[in-house]
Length: 371
Image (cartoon, rainbow, N blue to C red; front, side):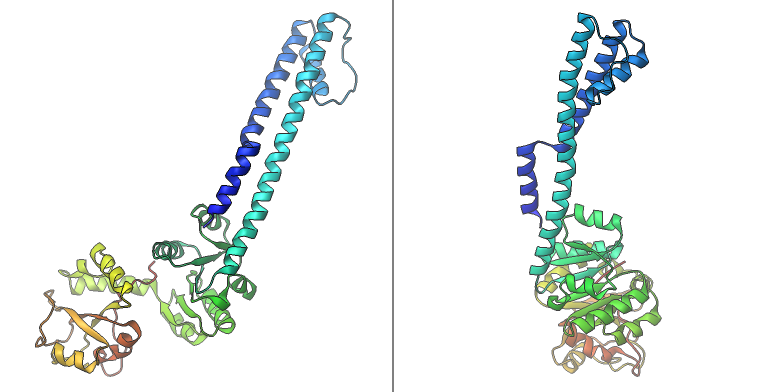
């Protein structure tokens, strides 16, 4: 994202040399010159304190006067050499210090302007609020998927990491509307607020929804009770990392022989990428007792879904896996049913697996935010 910035900095470095290298060379040069001058005065009969004082006021061109008479050819030669070499070295060192400070300031100024320009040009992008564990994983997934995104974060350490990874970022408080506007929320496709603070996520959701009614807001919730608040605030989808972890553990307990093919495995992650490229999602839902699908065949259930999804595997409660079930396979209570379909339609008809209107127990294998 910052190739042009790197090329510009590399060109400047070639023209002016490395500021750090020049600064280091200048310091070493002055130490050598001053040490040699002090030793020379001491060998000429001066006390160490007088010699050091004389060298310092000479190289810094202060001119307070000699501490000892410079009345011999040897002392005059040492003094002249110290003046020439010391003052020249001090000029070089001062220039290197100015170069170091100026280039760093210019790099910060122009780097920030360049980044702000790139952010202003973003369209149909993703805004990530928070760059903690989940934010870092999400950013990596979006980068791998070629989706443009910008990070909103306050912490210095997190910003330094985002900069080192070459991500677009703004160091700002995501709860402030001005920060969201600078991140381009009016032109964004999705906003993912993944802070560990539920109250902040609710506030960000409210602000984002008011600034852009059409943006998809995916919000992280720590407590189950926060899910309803986030949805009321305008979140399109709420992710509960702890809940997802509990579902994964439940999968391992309920379907120990088939859990390796479910969420988190390399095979499933590769499969998910292929499905997403085709506009499809994959879910695992548990067929609750007394739900509409109990006792019905796969063929009937798929007909009732009107093509919204199709069943690719059934994980029996006892651990048996039935891949590619035949149309006549009967769904039993407690079965884990693997569905593939278009996300919104498949989720809308997920109620077929619910018991008397209760929420089904989704074990999402979809590529969502994970803690």
